[in-house]
Image (cartoon, rainbow, N blue to C red):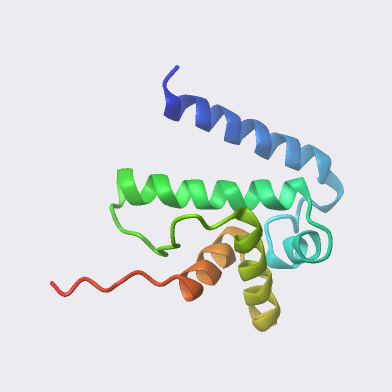
Length: 120
């Protein structure tokens, strides 16, 4: 199995585990409301895993499919830093908490790490 195929299987397994673990809240588990509580006070594996997955997805899409970056974090940024940035963005934008968390992660990181504009 290719590297990309293994990553897809891993992601599917993680999503299945989250769905099972949070079954009682499945209708809300994709929103910023759900994840703000899980990423704010106590750092959870689920929160860091979701952030890692969102950033990996962005990297793959930027290099493979769309060839366009939505955010440009500096080298060496940690998941802990990403978590702090995203939580800050969520707290500053409570009117957006109903949106999908993966979109809010992208918006928060794009606000903190905008990409240089292409002059062409």
